[in-house]
Structure formats: structure tokens, C-alpha cells
Image 1: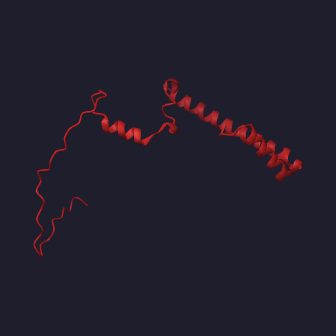
Image 2: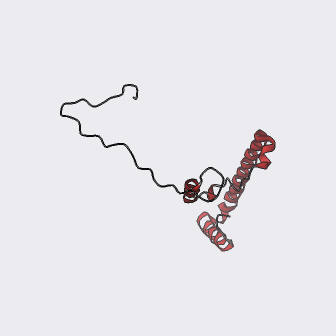
Image 3: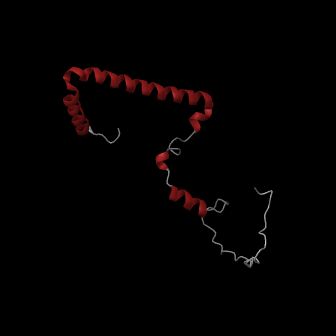
Length: 120
């Protein structure tokens, strides 16, 4: 849980005893227990509500696939660039097309630049 092992939890508990004192520690431990219990109930309620609203499709969802920790933008971009839409895994490499548009010449002094009133 959160990368904490027994030794770290023991150190945190020891520091809590020193800071809070043995008189207040049971009260704060009970509050922490209530907080964890209420958070667990909220999470279970959200899961039950989602299951109720999605119906039988809830069990078909691959939750591991939707885990944000699995997100790797480099892989997603690479897959999107290599995907040709046919379902084959081999990418199609096409040469870049040359532009046939000639660069425009500078405008004459005092000339009005073209303006499209519908574009704004």
C-alpha cells in the first residue's frame, strides 16, 4: 500500500506516539479508522452505482486497459503514426508529396491585403 513496508509504518507510528503523546493517540487512531471506513464505503457506493447504471456491460469492461498508469504517450503516438487503418501491423511508408503551390510575390506598396469577412 503506497510503497510502505512494515519498517516504515513502524517509524511513522513511533513518530506519531512522540508527537501526539500516548493520551491523544487512541483518539486519533479511532478517527483515522473512521476516515478509512468512510472512504471505503464511498468507493464501494460509487462502484455499485456505476454497476447499476451500466448494467451487464460493467462486467465486460477491461478495467486494466483503462488504468491511467498504463498510459504511455510515446507508445500511443507511435502506434497512431504506424497505423494505416487496414489492421495490418506493417506500416506503409509513403514519400512526402511536393507542394505544387508557388510562393506568393510580395504585395505592391499601398495594396490592401485580401480579407474574408465570413472567416471571422
